[in-house]
Image 1 (cartoon, rainbow, N blue to C red):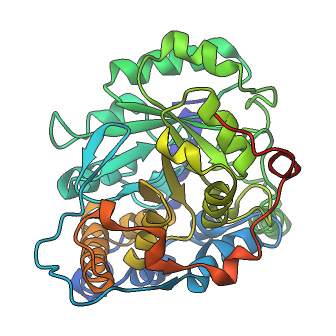
Image 2: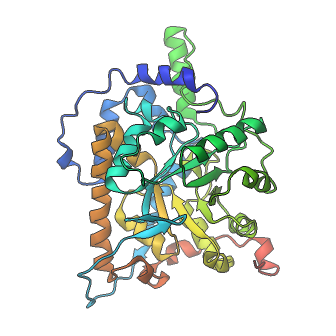
Image 3: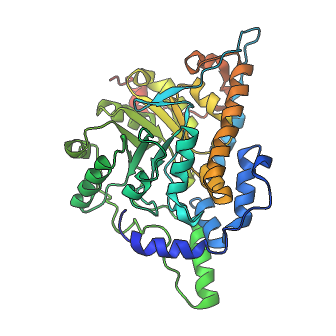
Amino acid sequence: MLPESANKVAVVQRQVEDSTLTPKVPLLHCINLYDFEDICKQKLTQRAWTYFSSGADDSLSDELNQQVFRHVLFRPRVMRNVKDLDLSTTILGQHSPLPVFIAPAALAKLAHPDGESGLTRGAGEAGIIQMVSSSASMTPEAIASSRVTDTQCQFYQLYVVSERHKTEDILRRVKKAGYKGLVITVDSAVPGKRERDERYKATLISDTNEKPKPLGFTYGGWLTPTLCWDDLKWIREIWDGPIAVKGIMTAEDALIAAQHGVQAIYLSNHGGRQLDTSPPSLMTLLEIRRHCPEIMEKVEIYLDGGFRRGNDVIKALALGARACGLGRPFMYALGAYGHEGVIRAVDVLRRELEIGMRLAGVTRIDELTPDHVNTKWLDMMVAEPVVFRSGQPKL
């Protein structure tokens, strides 16, 4: 657990005291991920909902994250034997029955009293991988102790802090706690301007004359703005497991990350919560395909941001993604129904993936190719960076 964690847990627990009643809608009535969101919105306090749902500035990146999938059409193949289906893959060398994982998201206790342990239990029972946030409302050790089996896989998302010894300490702790992979977030030199959060705080101060305590970590004060590629050498001195770099938004940085020997590149605009109008991860994937496709043979590529349907995942896989992360949808499922909601959300995704794969005419993930999708509407939006126009850099 990182700075201010002890205080924020108490604040978070108070926030959910009036939002833990059993939902009136039976769990089986949730037939898509939007249903969990609607129910969770009714249950959470205004402060909690504002925190989870807010984006930066005008929230345009947040909106684009979901809209981009509508501009990719399938090119399904027919008359194929699709009876036997295999949706399994590996993520940072770890087996996963589905090409999806729980993306790192902060302060799960704000959604449900079980907090991150509810996500862990749901992930474990459903068999998928959970990425645990540095800004969790529980310690890494407590979250790890919630695993349902000894073989359950968790990765740890790391914010590199200004005081290097604190980063080194957390790395040693998560290694000892059995986390299998490290996901380093690199898009947060400063916090994004999340206006709905700020507006809520301003309204609360005006109405009550009381300044609210921060729910999230005030990472503008301790997250280092000096993080650079050379720091990977230092991190590797302590962490000898696989590493993914999260927050890549351009083909140029994807190429640099691959050149630095990371095992995976995680395309993300931080759920639209950092630099507004940053590209959806699917657009960055198209950039990579156009300008430096050779890196896709060297590193695994993950995406998050806006995934709400199994078909969204299939489109990303067809374009070269290894797996896709969902953050808010699993947090909403947790908030609505606890760990059982997480399990149900995975079941919903599994069924959508099974239907979509069969109707696309494939039975395994490695059968998906760019020929299964039509990206013409998006291709005109792919950037042409000078560095590639001037000579197409290679690994």
